[in-house]
Image 1 (cartoon, rainbow, N blue to C red):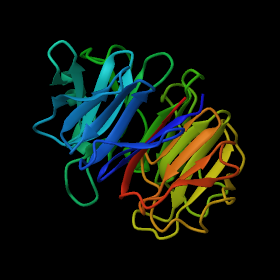
Image 2 (cartoon, rainbow, N blue to C red; image 1 turned 120 degrees about the vertical axis):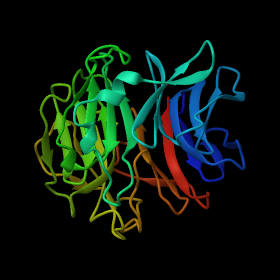
Image 3 (cartoon, one colour; image 1 turned 90 degrees about the vertical axis):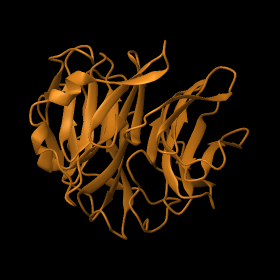
Image 4 (cartoon, helix red, strand yellow; image 1 turned 135 degrees about the vertical axis):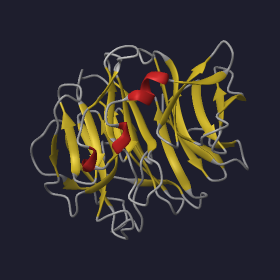
Length: 307
């Protein structure tokens, strides 16, 4: 079965694959999570929509106070990250979003910030194979759960917040292997976030916005900073201590903007990258060779791929 690619844009959700189509036209899509026949998306900044086995999209819930920034569908249900560095959970019986109160008291929360002076945001979410949840706050590092998400003593800070993490990602099958795309390179933890090492070897610049895992390969987007006009994709084996290799075949010489958080996704050997100018690139060999899957789309905010 060929992978399904979903591309969230400022004007609808585009499905690429054996039968391409557009969902939710006229709506701004900011986050996608889930799997084939179980998709969850953030719509118009505040609404949560779902498409199940029948493929029909339904509005499920609304975050009235804070804009939604990221979603995670895991064994505990649907988790929702928001502006202001909050974490919500969908109560499926009442179809309401309830704050995860224990997340509000994480040690070090008073140090979370943004360089421009606004409150920090919940930027990305991940869950490992053992069920631990990792919440990336920008700028606030990565907080991990050590038990159930709602437990009063569940949350612990991990990485130094000055690493400026933009995305956290758990390996889909190796327990406790966690990756982080950060301003200082790729962070790797092999003990569930307890300790971290960072590397930028082989990159033209260390500023990373996105990370994906394609089988035994990690793919990252790198640039010189938040407003860089020279961004590129790189790959190397998961767990390797060697240099990154630049992805060239089928890609532009440089992306004119960062390939942003959640604009890089993978499943199996398939990798998908969405550029801000509306072009979607795909690779079926873990990032060695690429081709254009779609172009002239509205501005892209996120991509997802499912088997």
